[in-house]
Image (cartoon, rainbow, N blue to C red; front, side, top):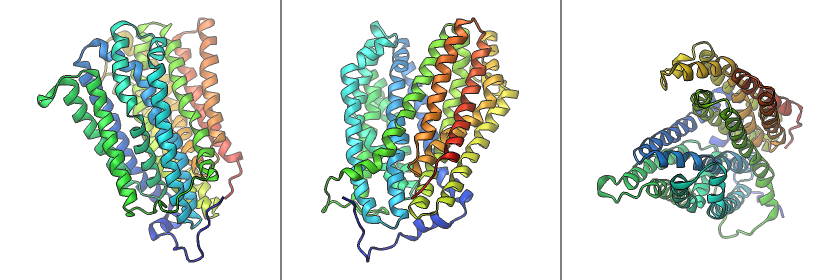
Amino acid sequence: MTIEAPADAPLPAPPLNRLLTAPILPTLLRLATPNAIAMLGTALVAVAETSYIGRLGTEPLAAIALVFPFAMLTQMMSAGAMGGGVSSAISRALGAGDPLRAGVLALHAILIGIGGGLVFTLVMLTFGRSLFALLGGHGEVLEQACSYSVVLFSAAVSIWLVNTLASILRGTGDMILPAAVLLGVAALQVVIGGAFGLGLFGMPRLGMPGVASGQAIAFTLGSLFLLVYLASGRSRLRLQLRSFQLQWPIFIDILKVGALACLAPLQSVLTILIFTKVLASYGTTTLAGYGIGSRLEFLLIPIAFAVGVASIPMVGMAIGAGDVARARRVAWTAGAVSAVIVGAVGAVLAIWPSLWVSLFTTDPAVTAAAHAYFHLAGPGFGFFGLGVTLYFASQGAAKVGGPVLAATARLVLVAVGGWALVAFGAPASAMFAMVAVAMVVYGLGSAAAIHLTRWVK
């Protein structure tokens, strides 16, 4: 059953109309800025959390490394993948002048968020120990990982709800409130996690479970705030609570983008795990050098994410309004912005890698490995930024299949190419060059997919 707006339904509010008519580049940058600040705050939380976990000892530090890929996967799926599907569906409905449908979509999105969180809770509480052991965890490290994971993933519903509700608001074109809430959640996470983990301010010293409780409590409070805000009717859409009925076509409108998009973060995590495993065979020095380089990659991803997420409502509303040409201009502009910014950083460090490497090590062997990484992989960073941003822009058009296939090509290249290089005894520099090639394949593959895919309303 399709929701039809009554004939006298109000037109979208002026702020929404501006997303359909305003100059693309300034509007895109205005929308991206709050997201970039929020992502920076999230990155700083990871640094702070690692810092006070380090004060708990070596085993907790090793334990967090085991849990991190799964915690990252939770965030990437709920915020960037399924969250993009939510923003896409709502922005397309608003662009078509159907706020009633947008409100119904929001309620279905909340149910999807609850379901996604419950799946992560069930999987990690049931299989977490086995997964950590598979990654090499044992003894006290394994126990610490499990104690952290149980608390963290018991609150997976809250994590999914915060990111789902933020995506609902982003779909309306509101980037400021979601960013402010995420910054507030980040601040609470640091304070609460540090207090309970280290026993600060007279709190009991709970260790790793206490650190995880910071994230659990902060996201629970954030989800409650956003639920109250949306229910109050102060946002740009109204939740259709009184007339709400479950409708499979509404679920499908979100899942046809979000479910397929969830393959991308899975592939990203697999790519990292496979490449790390392959590089480990080259020795600790090479792995440490790569670790310094990959740390920068994680700091650059928020730039591409911020611009990409900002493009979703602009693309979605244009598609909903039938202005496919504008939707494509938004996508290409967003991709170009990310490619230029991320590419410029990569180019600078390819020439002067010591600007970054010297911040982390003075060991000559590790420095040499890190320099080799940036010399060879740095030129590919711009293509990586292009691919990530176009992945989000394609969500706005509900045509995410091509960029996901491009990510698959990157994964296959790293897996097969890495195995072949090791088998033939290639030097570590060849592995770093392969990283750059994989980024180029991902970026150009995503661009080709969008160029060749027919976007329609």
